[in-house]
Image (cartoon, rainbow, N blue to C red):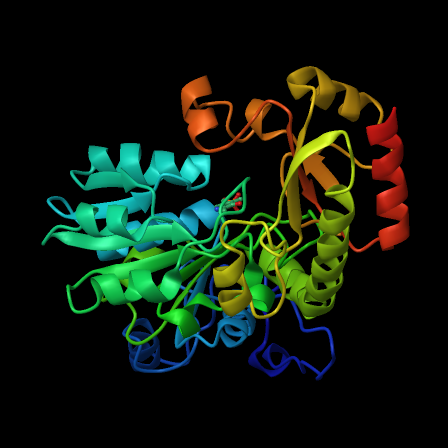
Length: 384
Ligand SMILES: *Cc1c(COP(=O)(O)O)cnc(C)c1O
């Protein structure tokens, strides 16, 4: 390869609706002092891609503004975002409180992995404010809950949880993945930190795994050290894809939420179904809170229990050719999952019962197809 002359270094980057991808792992420094200033954070710029690159910054900024956050970082997965939050906010000897209804891997990270680092964890039902208050200690540094929990779609009262811990040197972290910023912006309700798995509806195209961590006020002091030193910066191409997915996020979310609400109402009339879980239904235990907190819609996920238990769930699967069985959610297409044998398989039968996860429970993730089509396909499967 020929050495490049300095004259050919300047390449014009023309403005365009689709931004460029910067795959560079390292950037050219103007001078020794200049690079020093960038590395010290005193000057905008890039030196080494693990510390930051334009595509990560562009995605973080797009996500920051969606959440009305003061700062935001992106990471290689939703789990990585939780790990950055844990490592930045807590250290050995500290205590964290987590919801018993958290995503399974989040429970594993914040309880089991955190314990290996000397961080103590209490698990409590954070949909119950008394249980949350009872778990608080002087050394509690982080309280972690989800806006809408999976799969029975119970809500956390973010404003009251925020009040409970204010002034105690403890942060409220809300995993907002099931709601997404279109339905809820937890920072506006008093959360300090928000995590999103961008893998789900914010990207929405089933083609990247990425995470977001954003917050109100000053970021945790160790945030940038943890982000760079533990190697939590995602790749440029994934960031670029997610930024593209995010451009249509609001439209997709609005459509999916409206369809999900209609589907939930229609499913309540199906004789094969014993219970429909959806925060937008008046019979849902958190409906009043949902009407306050979920301003932009009640979400795109509907769960329902089939009368015949596991056998009925298996029959439903065999008779539903149009809608794929995908143990994730937030895709363009409508998909469904069977929590008892996928996301919550690790729990004992008693633990599943306590969380309301019956063997006949189906979790539907509503996509952007026409309502009539989704309803037709579901009705046919339920009837057969
Ligand atoms: C998927 C998910 C995560 C983890 O996100 P990844 O991007 O898969 O690492 C965390 N919390 C919730 C609620 C999720 O649904």
